[in-house]
Image 1 (cartoon, one colour):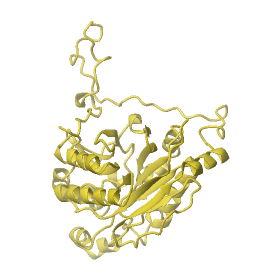
Image 2 (cartoon, rainbow, N blue to C red):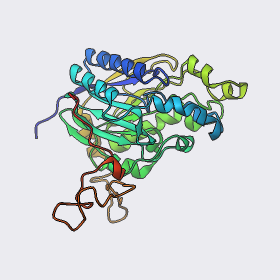
Image 3 (spheres, one colour):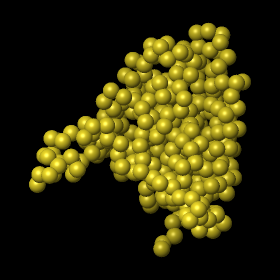
Image 4 (cartoon, rainbow, N blue to C red):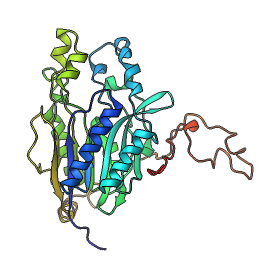
Length: 350
């Protein structure tokens, strides 16, 4: 097997233009270009960076949060839409792998999406967060087992998860079992409940991301966003809310397969891009020490049962003929939005 050369990777810490799809995509394209200019072959972005994490869901009763939803939905990304295609064109123009986080509008629902785009502008992974966390469930729907995926590329085996998916041991193990080598851990701004919840802060988030690197023997790009003073002012109309949300919250870092931090952090209230070099020798050494889905496993004691079938809400029996007809039917039809599965995105050139 030909040995892969070392590659430079990048991890974004930046605020979106909150709740503005057009301007956030434009900013994302600038960051993609910057990472590529600095020699990165891969760049990871925060959770639902487009059009920004819905901080309002954690500050209000659900009925009050609904008042923010029309603007938020209007600025969500549609897979295969013009803004998605613009991001793919940017990846192709700059010859870089991009893992972008976004709020996805599909039909009448929103999902917490991540897309891994190739340097040719092709979507390699189009996934949704399997289980939104706490207040997020008032905003977003769920993904399924098809969204736990690792892809083999010229720069290594790539995968991604969102936020507290990294606290779900079985989801992590599903990724480890696919021999992931470079992982994007997408996080929101760690700006909520700083005085009330250690679990939502930098230390806990770093510990979780670092553990993923150590357990999976892979590189982890832990990408976070910033809460701007403007969005805090917009969302916090009472002293109580201002006690729950503060500007800043950036805590991005890149961890190696032994768990070591590989770069200097950026101050929590500043923006920038972190860089590190991926060594496949280091991954090999870590895997030799402990591979939890390989030689370090005990399948006679414990195994994971993973359902990778699409969770289709409806199967339309007439979408391709009856199930027993020669023309195909529900058992043979392609996944479509009618059946609740992700559609096949169009090529970036469209």
